[in-house]
Length: 315
Image (cartoon, rainbow, N blue to C red; front, side, top):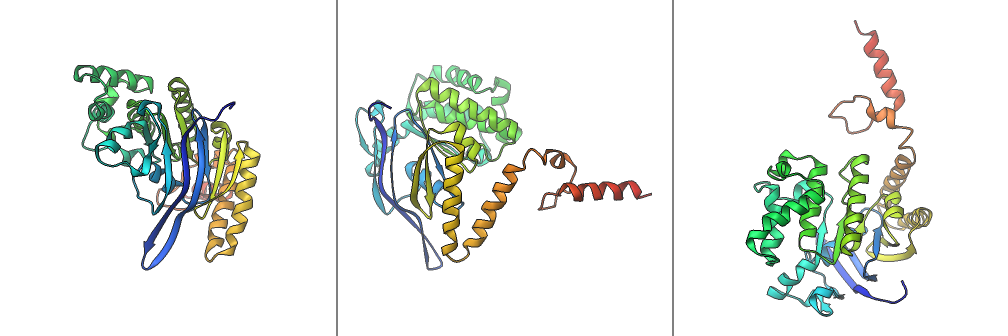
């Protein structure tokens, strides 16, 4: 980018959770800038503070200290985001929206999907009441939902359809900043590609800035222009986005986890995830094999073949 035009400036953000007398720093002096129209990824191990960061920026959790400057063009100036309250905060929420990893928990189970998509226009008074249904139908069609689908309740839809509905609802208020907390983690590989491409296409059309959390380094390389790495609530690295640089940063800082108690389990989980990702293609046949619904561990190809032999030998 030739000139700096930050839409978001975060400085010294800190958040601590306390349970049973133990204090855990979820965010510790987090600072970064996000340029208008940029796509920034936040990566890190589980428990590093990624989701807490997004929730703090959405004003869903309070922080102990820090400053956030938010500069949506629709607001006519820079906002001291954490100082807003009451009606001023309610009016400004339309400029920043979020999409979360569990679409089932994001929608009211007692309301039709169509009603959920219409809600931002009602809350923010963005158009006349007689135009809301038409606008909602057009936006639903844009994300791939037909009128028959939006006339159902959330439990009647697939995960992919639910996530499309959540994206439509988030975009209804025409936000300038969209925060994405692993929006594809609950979907299968085919649906992940569709949702990612949909988000990118709509963001380009609307000039929406994207800040998203992900563990998938292939997705990071495809989606992001820049990456920041969180470790124990602190920003420990900033890189331009490439698959090799993101993976190298993750491995480097995963090794440093060994300094603390109980962190060996974190490392083992990280290594298992990396191994599963690298062997995903070779295990596609084993994944398709039938397995017990109650089993917690995925059967290996050798175990699957042994089960098949026993089944054939059973009279």
